[in-house]
Image (cartoon, rainbow, N blue to C red; front, side, top):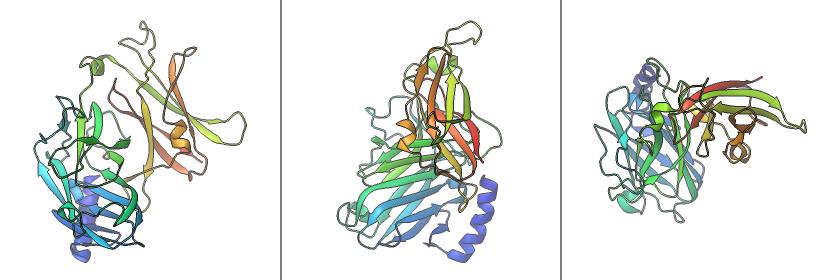
Length: 311
């Protein structure tokens, strides 16, 4: 993905400068303006990632200044949220990236104030290039400019080619937060270091018709075993969640998360003991035609991905 983004970056930066209008590009800091009629802006840092802020409601006009800082590590992590062994995710540049947000509003460091400058939660989406396969992906947030990353705001994670590959598109992370400060893509360790080595997931996504015939669904299932598929009994996974995304037609090749009805069946898998698989049905009603990626994340294994097509 970074080769295509870099080409766009060179062109768009020449045309746009450092002021962000719908989407703009930069290599260090970018300024974007928000208003009651402009509630979403995308900050494109090329090989250092693409981060978008979507406000539910903007009450007053303000600017956000976002800086993409290349770092070799992030150590200011709250151990109650990020246990020992948590590391930042390196991009294809070889560096991790910390996104620091300031602005010209009335909050600390000029960031907007909830209830004064905006209402509701802020949806944050990060697309980045990385060949790194995390154990448990996390979207780290420093909520108060401490500086201390004390929140994992991750609600969605899709990697088109998880597990790792040598030449693939980058992952996307999504999350929601009431305020903004600094963000970074992080990797949490497994609770038991042996778990990620012995669990073998097998993921499928098969279109189905609901029993009522009213809603199209895709059945996502995976079989989990300790070591051998032929000799070990299947395991139930109570921690697994899934996310669905497709290539954003307005911002290719970046990913956009699909709005699933009921959050994707409350985003919980149930265990089918007869077939020995963990199953979740996705209601695909109102999703447009096209190809979609499904990534399943768990505390037992690294993320895995499959695809399905809506005709």
